[in-house]
Image (cartoon, rainbow, N blue to C red):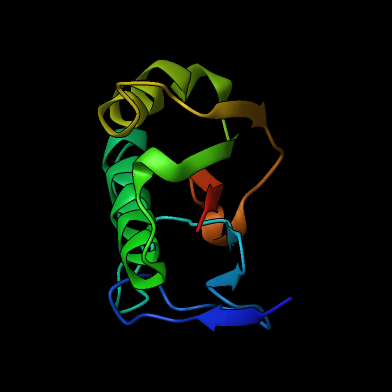
Amino acid sequence: MNRTVIKTDKAAPAIGPYSQAILTDTMLYCSGQIPLNAQGVMVEGDVTAQTIQVFENITALLAAAGSSYEKVVKVTVFLADMNDFAAMNAVYGQHFAVNPPARSTVQVARLPRDAKVEIEITALR
C-alpha cells in the first residue's frame, strides 16, 4: 500500500511532528485542523469565525489530495465548549448539505493554542 504525505501552503502548517494529511491507495486521513491560517496565525473571534477557517484548511487539504467534500466518510469535531455546537454546526452544514458523512462531536478540556474548535476528517481518495 502506498502512503503519501500531503502538504500544501494553502492550509495551516503543521505545528508539531505530524503531517497535514496522509493519502493511501484508497483513503485520505487529515490531521485535526484548528483555526490557523496558511501563515500559521490563529484566527481570532467566535467559534463561527474559527470554524470557517478550519473548513478553509480542510478545503485546501482535500484539493491537494485530489479529493472532495462528497468523498468525506467520517468527521470528528472537538469543541472547547459544547454550547458552541449550534454555531459550529451552521458552518459545518454549508459543507455537508447532501448525504453528510458520519460524525462525532465531543467537548474537550482544551485544544491546541486555545482554539475553540478542531476538526479532523477521513475521506475516500
